[in-house]
Structure formats: C-alpha cells, structure tokens
Image (cartoon, rainbow, N blue to C red; front, side, top):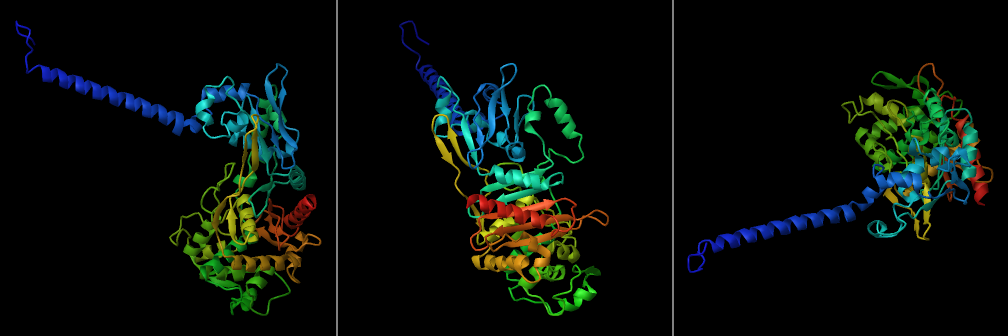
Length: 503
C-alpha cells in the first residue's frame, strides 16, 4: 500500500513480487507440461495413434483411402481394390487359397490376417519413411498406401490347400536361412470374397460360425496338437545340447525293453511293432531311424525336466511366437505338476516322444525343422518381403535372428538322423515317402495318439536338400492315421514342387 505522500509500504512490495514469481513459475510449469504432453503424443505415441483401429482417422481411411494391393512372392495379385454396386471401395481376392495368410478386409467385419497386421501400411496411415507420422497431418493428402509383397508363393500355397482338400489340418513351409514363410495353409478355410460381400457377408459368416470344423480357426498358427514322434527332434536337441547324451549314447536295457516294455513308475512304454533293429542297443541316429519311443523316453529322463523345458523354450515353446499373425504358445507340459511342471517322471518320459501333455502348433514344428536345417540358428518367421508405397518409398523386411538354439555340430548330427529316417534301410518304411527324387531329404514322421478310439494325427516335419536346405516343412492332418500314410507323402510332394519352382 502507499501512504499519503505516494510512498509504497515496504512490507507489501515483496509479497506482490513473490506472488508474481510463483504465478510465473506455475505458468511455466503448465506450458512445459503441455509441451511435453504434445511432444509425447505427437512423437512417442504417434505410431500407436496412427495404427489404433479406434482412431477416427484410421476408421475413415479404411473406408476412403485407396488401399494398397497384396502380392505373392512372384508378384501375383492376391488382394486388390474393386468398386461395389453403390460405388463403395471393396476388396477382391483373386486367389482364395491365400485366405489363411491374407485374411480379409470388410466394411462390416473389419480385418484379419495380414490385412489386419499391416492395415496402417496398406491404407498409408503409417508412412514408410522416418518422421512421416509428424508431417502427414499437414499434407493435403494424408494417405500414402503401400503395396505388400509377401514371401508366400501362391503356387505352393494352392498346392498345399489342394493336398489337404476336405481334411482338417495345416501346412507350414519356411525358407530356413531367412525365416521367410513360403506357405501357410489351414483347412478347412473360407472364401474371403463371400465374406466381404456387403449383401451376403453376414449370412456367410453365420454359416462359418455354425460349422463344427471351425473354418475360421487358423490351424497353422493357433491349432494346438499332440505332436507324436516329430517331437523327438526337440528331445534330441535338448539331450545333445544339455550334454545328457552323445550321438553314440545307447541304453543296454533297451533291446529287452522292446519286448517287455520300459517300466517307469509302473507305467509301460513300448515301441511300435517292427521286425528289425530289435537285438542290439540303438544309438541316437538308429533310434531316430526306427522312431523308438523307448530310446527317447530314456533320453528325456536323462535330460531331466528343467533342461527339457529350457531347451524347448529356446525353440519358442511356452510363449507366443513373434509373428505377423496371432500365435498360440506350444507347451511341453501344462505346468500343473510338482516336477518343474511335470506331474511325475511318467509324464516326462511320455513328453519326450511327443505324448503326455505336449501340445504344439504347426508353425512351431516348422520352426524346429528350420532351426535344424539352419545349423541350429533360429530366425524369426516372416510373411512380408517388402512394402512399396505409392510415393515410391520402400521398406524391406530383413531376416532377424532370434537366437542360436544348438551348435552347428549338434544340428549336423540331428540332420544325419533325419536323413537316415527318410533314406536309411529301415527308416524308409516309416518316412521314405517323403523322399524328394534326386535330392537328399531329411525328415521325421509322427503318429500322435489322441485317445483310445479316435484315429491318430498324421505328422511330418522335414527339409530339403539336406546339404543346403531351401525349404523346411511341417504337415499335420487331423485324425488321418499314421504319419507315413498321409502327412509324409504330402510333405515330400510339396517340397519337390517348391524345389522345381525355384530351379
């Protein structure tokens, strides 16, 4: 306050100054917070907001943006834009066999498959170049749609779908040295053209949902199956990697156990009947050739529950696989038991030859085969080779190493065992149908028991050529009988086809 002469009260001046200082600090903090918040949302969270299906801009782009095409590895169009009867943008799928890979994009039902995984890139809301998210909103045309070039070969995909036919099952083929997925077949499937039809799509979807065969289930990545003897390759990786066995490891009691059974805590483990290799103890390669349950039960018990789980986890078991499409985690055991998740030694012994509580996806078993084929190095599986935007920008998907699972030496031993399983004197009766003419072929058949009455699942995993693998494959046909009767020849035929396509 001032006195009558206009002089300020000295006690009041500091108080006003302090108040102004506090106000200035508060305003500075507010504007700093606003600046940081805007920076966070426009820079850090820009990509998340751009790709969020709930973002109104994303929803508008789905209906209005010129969506990019999807092409197979050779440039064949598998998803394109067309105009509907009312002028609306619709998707058309010239090669319906690609449905398990491509999925669909519907104005009513949304997206699935790579249409969903790469929705923001296809609509151009996620620019391929750096910094695009920040400047896009200031451009007159915010969209820069990208064409998607897949790694899948539509010819191999169609052959896999035709081979499965009306049977329930899946085929996954991978290029071992890169992780590129060459085929991803799931049967039964759906026709995406009928699903995206605005007039009849709802009725068609209702009919699919009503089918017991579950055609909307992506069996290749989310179907969980008892693996049977194809899991013996996982046990071999764990046994060799942990040091529990060597390639020349034998079990002196094994010949007698072929006739009497291998007793584990009162449970008897037996091999399938055979007229050869019954007198002398088998080593790893011989046991793989004749698919001895008894031998691999011994290996599993010697490896132990902790090491079995650890080595399986290195291959991807126990967690969803990092992939463009949703994946179900494979399991060695359901984790409910006191023995590191196993109920007891009986469950561990059974799991070692692919029974018990062991459940796998076809994608997981294709990765097991690809890892062995690639000298023990596991690569991330990919469905896309590159993206090419309308503006000319390009992004290439490079191979990505997940981890080294086993040594090159161990992988070579297992490769030798798998070659013997296909081409050996005795292995031919189990897996010989997978032999690719003129090419050294590695493989393992599987007959997975799923109950006392139901027919077993038919399995095959393998790769070719064994010396320089170009394709690794997993085939599962549900309740089709033995591996050698159905999955084995199917796997061999598909490998032969692919090798002929790339020659």
